Image (tube, rainbow, N blue to C red; front, side, top):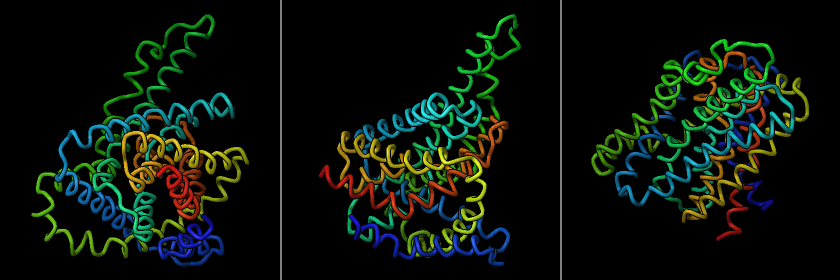
Length: 338
């Protein structure tokens, strides 16, 4: 286990992230050119979507139905567990609990990409359709979190004495899950590009698409990921001070829950017949936290939630923890089942 962690820490992917982290901590004047970070993000989203679509074209629906159902289950249950931990055990306020429920129920595309690199370095095979499951898991957590908010606000309004309905109990669901929320969830940058690229790869097929996409989206993927993680290290380093202000309990939440959710994902993956690599990837998806899709939806639907909590914790604590430690840890745990 120790050797696996060291191997992961010394990989170019993690070292470039650490380089960016150190740059932020020592307040280096190094900065990414404006627009480059956005361009790298777009590239990674398209690359993962295309690869997922091309591989899915080789499978029938019956072959992927059970893994898709398992992914939907995880994307729906993790926000509920998060709410129980934060709202009733840690006594965090409702809006920020919802923000973290959506963030930790959704996924980190870059963490997933780093996990693929790790599995490739250990010569561990995995189901090619796993890239498609990234898209499946990106959406349900947002809707479940917003549904929980509507239900809890409705219940709270009903419990207040001498108050009349002010449109919360009767229309809370329709007002919270509004057309704008649906638009952000389904057509925000990450989901839109992932789904669009996945459908393109699925429709065209691997044989026809590969000659076109391989030079840019396959051969250069690892190199572009290094640049992206260098920038993410800079951003994460800037968020660390913000997260520390919210106390040790949230810091522990950002470290402990990725392991717990990851183990849950591994057991679910094992239960639906995924390979060692597939179950590891499902565990890593379960243990990751979104800093693109979920925050975009939260800005539109739960503006009272503090971005420094849900975005700072996901990016400043959970992302580096997953990158350096949790990926090899979950791989080691999954290996015990196979």
